[in-house]
Length: 85
Image 1 (cartoon, helix red, strand yellow):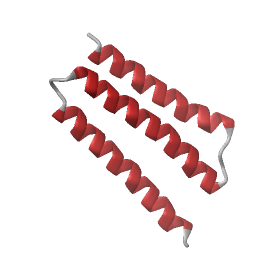
Image 2: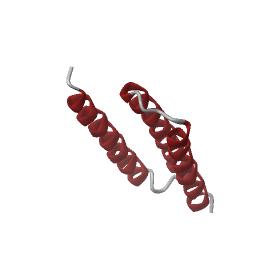
Image 3: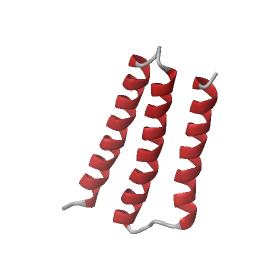
Image 4: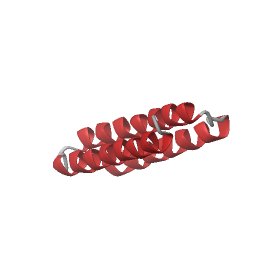
C-alpha cells in the first residue's frame, strides 16, 4: 500500500477525531466535567496517534514523542483550568 495514502488516511482520522471532540465539547457545554473528560480523551488519542503514526513511518524519536506528549499535557491543563472554574 502506498504510504502517501496511509498518510492521508491517518491525517483524516486525526481531523475527524478533532471535529468529533469539538462537537462533543459543544454538546456538553452545560456539563464542564464531561467536557474535560472529552478533552482528556482527545489529548490521549492525539499522543497515541502520534506514537503509532511515527512508528509506522519509522521516524519516531524521543524528541518527537515528547512534543506530542507536551502538547497533550498543555491541552489537558488548559482544559482543566477552563472547566474547573
